Length: 69
Image (cartoon, rainbow, N blue to C red; front, top):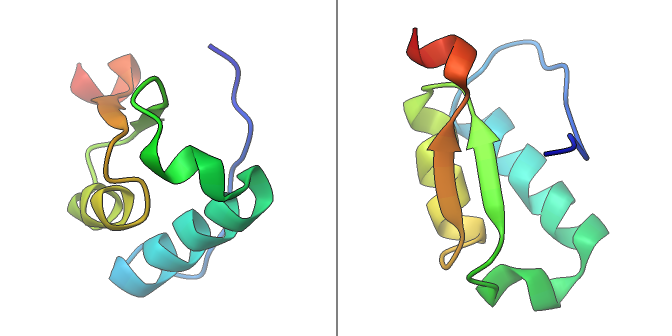
């Protein structure tokens, strides 16, 4: 697993998470939006969950092990 993107925002909310995921989508290309082998690893943020589902609906979303413990 290699991190390909990270962001620093003023506040982790739905708008900033959606902004980040849409910019990641634009950077990766539109063919990634429906890939079933794309795995997105994040903290346990509900905002990120909803943004991932909206932008990458076919991806697999997992939680970072550090945030699970």
